[in-house]
Image (cartoon, rainbow, N blue to C red; front, side, top):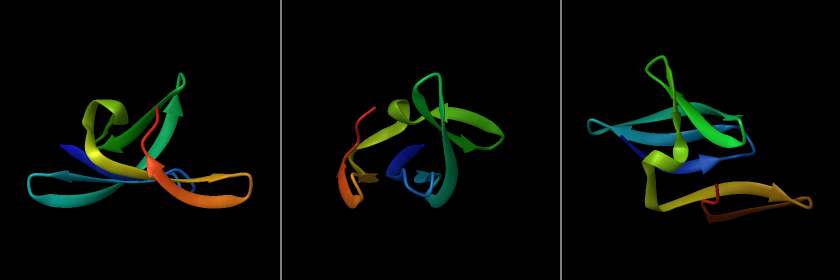
Length: 69
């Protein structure tokens, strides 16, 4: 399982598992970002690709950057 990208605005991430891509909902639990896949919550930081980016909104501007926990 590998996290390919994160959309913090719409609260979902895209992962790949077994050669297929999935879009999974995300939420923050105890200050850490998790995604829901196969009836379980998994920490994004444990499965993040080194090339993954996140889409965020700060100060009214939308932009893409490297993932920050």
